[in-house]
Image (tube, rainbow, N blue to C red; front, top):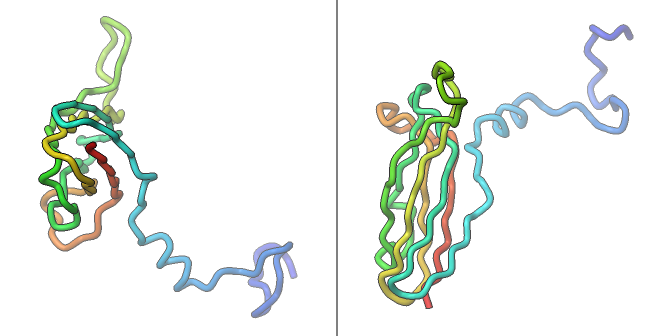
Length: 139
């Protein structure tokens, strides 16, 4: 078999068997779930976090209230997008990602799970490109 021929069904390639196409496509189509952000606060305290974002591609972060749980324990404030840092006097870096800043304010004792999704707002019914969970514990 030369390197351009397909191996026989069930043949091993090194130590790995070839993936079936359906499985590979399912894995590629699943939205990425980033590691959860954990925040611990006392009532009245504030904490912040940032998420990488590139709005020039149309993808922006937003809170998904339907997937969030017990969100009334905290208030999430959208502090906006900051473009990438560059040297003074340098031209803007076209297409480079920046960061989206968020603030979490503890309102009452309890546990909240905020779910943010990275998506294009006009693409209704399409799975988000990425999902970020924020677990907030207020004591």
